[in-house]
Every structure is written in structure tokens, then in C-alpha cells.
Image (cartoon, rainbow, N blue to C red):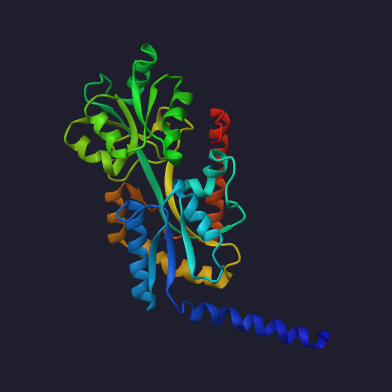
Length: 322
């Protein structure tokens, strides 16, 4: 092509970008969720999809692609056409921990996705003790565990990041609370409430009813800030500086998705995830969103922080990938 035509090519490309964002979407948009229907992550994403469908006049739908701790969902998204019609709600695993937990992955966590919008930024876990355990605070639990090494046990979720809650606690506290692995969350809670295990690191939403009934005692939350609906409950980090483990739901796109589409979706999601009704619903799940969808640059900073945090955790635990 002759050089004199290049300015026209550039001008047409610049004109085409806003038009693409304005016309998008022209067909249904798929949001892939690694959790099954009815799980809090799924419910949060469905809320966003339903409101996008109303505000944009096109169908946004959730596709539950379950299996392998989120790996299959991420693989499916990474191999999808980067055309603005397939997105993934990433969790901490996809963002930061899968690369350490598995010897090989069918996708590259850093190269195959670009962040789009924050759906929720807080999914703290609760540290709780059975009501028969003579510890009213986290410091008292640590002292008790040190006085009786190997006598206390905690139920451990074997799937994904949640399985690291206990080991990281033991590492920073210098305790030896024995992990008992469960494949079923229902069985984990059942044994804890029955007193067969004495400590648990698990979902706020699932443990809260037992805490309110006086069957278990909440000691702390694992997030970096106190949980809004339980403001008197301290964070673990207030006793063990450096302990911070939580989840998040980050909408991401396959690398190569047009930037103007990403920016448009980011703008459309922001008011939805700031809606007080949505935030109330998140709180009922044990989730939160502190600052809306964020900008893409801010999301990249969040991802970088999480990766640095988890790199430290896996290194100090000397974790061996599966």
C-alpha cells in the first residue's frame, strides 16, 4: 500500500473503534462461571448478567462450566474467540494460585486473560471454634493450640485456595492444628458443628447460621478489613500480621478482545455493582464490593498484588504442586 494512503487507514480504524463499542453486543454474551447454579459466585454473576440484559437490551447469560477447581472454565474461556462475546468470572485460583497448585495448566493465567470489571472484591472466610473449645479470642485459640500441639483439628476444604487457610495459619501462628480433609463442604460443617473437629476456616455465609444459633464461636475473618456486617469481629491479621486470604470475582476476557468492548462493558457494569440492593445481596453471601467495577488499570494493580501475596504464601509453605 502506498504511503499516502496510510493516514486514511489510521483514520478509518479510529472511527471504527467507537462504532464497534456502540453497536456491541449484537448477539448473546456468555459469562462463564466455574461454580454450579445457586452457589453465591453464580448468584452474584447472574444478578449482573440480568441487569446488563435489561440496560443494554441484549441477552447476557451465565454458563456454568464446572470441574477441576475452575481449570476447565478458564481453559474454555482462553480457547474462545476474543470477539467480545465470551467472558470468565475469575476467582483467586485463576488469577494467582493455579500456577502453583498444578504442575501444568491448559492455559496461561497471565497471558490468556485481561481484566474487565470487579464483580465482588471480598469473599472472606470465617475462623471459628466449636462452642466447647475454651477459647474466646483468636489469641486464646493460638495459646491453647501451642499448649496442646496436635490435639486440635480443623476441617479442610480440599478444593482450591480454601485448602491453604489452615496451613498458612499454622505457619504464621507457630501452631500444629491438624487438618482433616473433606471433599464435601456439607460433611465438613456437619462434623465441625458436632464437635468432631474443633476449628474451621470456611465460608461466612455457610457458618453464620450456626454462629447465630450459638453452636460455634466466630473468632476472626480472613480478609484484610473487618467484615461490614460483623464489625466487632477482628481480622486474623490483627493477631497475625501478614495473614490475608480471601476470594474475589473478577470478570475477565480472552486476550485479544477489543479494548473498546472491554471499556464499554466496564462502564456498564460499574453502576450495577454499586447498587445498594446488589451490595445487600452480596453481604448475605459473605461477599462485598468496596469500590465498584474499577478501571482496567486498577484491576491490573489488584491482580499484581494478589499474585505477589500468593507467591509468598506458596514459597513459605514449600507447597508441592499436584
